[in-house]
Length: 392
Image 1 (cartoon, one colour):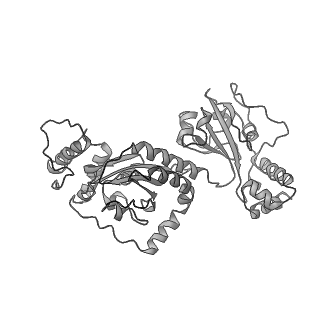
Image 2 (image 1 turned 135 degrees about the horizontal axis):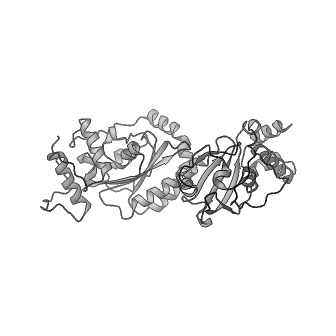
Image 3 (image 1 turned 180 degrees about the horizontal axis):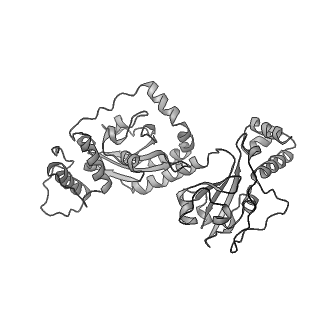
């Protein structure tokens, strides 16, 4: 066992096992773990204890000075290239987050799925000896490099985490407080980590709640990026939550099956709802009814197969070269309790048919002006020309 040295607070520990504040609990936990070889259950979180154990097994010593090796221009470039899809989706959310943090002294760090920093809030000019080194594009914040930190634990566990003061493994990081939350892709894999950090002071707000909210917003933005033709569904029991990080998101493929779904959607649809399930089995409406809601900004009310009433907005996502080969959905009957809105009998019933009608109607409304129609559809002129050629 390594010796315990340099606790964040140089105060004598009271004899009783219960302490009123987190710094005292962390100090006692470090003494028990590092000096006495005891497991400090109840003094710090289980996630922190497990991280300490991994660092100890890697033969890291708590007094070590972290080098934070210089980051070359080429290394920064590689980090930004790898993180480009995440950065593009996250950019508007990060701007809002940084505006919210402007007067707090806290900094936001966005890491890719490997823990490499791809974005950081500029320093507020305060004394930040550790954050100044750690908060640089290209720096690796994984546990193997910087020990126990909130982003390092999220990378290992996939769960949101807060690490403050003496809960950090290395003595050098004892002045930091950090809260981090995961960002997942459509496969449920870790795509990135959002972290809030402050040095030399505690958070003056609930950092765990805030970072979870904004990580959810980035995840939703990442999920909404077009990746092949699909019907994008936004839904919630309260329509006021649509367009917020608390909305449910799902993608439906041309066979009328769930292609992906976020965690909020799983909680509304119920346990066992996984990609591959038919939409009529979970949404109480077939693909044609869901397509009928596409293109309208006002949410429509649907009764899910589990009986829960939700408000839903759908949008057809267009991706070059996919719609023409997309098969029609199987013929299915809506469940008995479903109450979908009445659909136009002449409405298209497949994604490909709906795609063609949307393109042609928009082009007609724009008087045949391809540039104007492309702007209205939110696609490039080249993509629109390719779609028109495929219809001939």
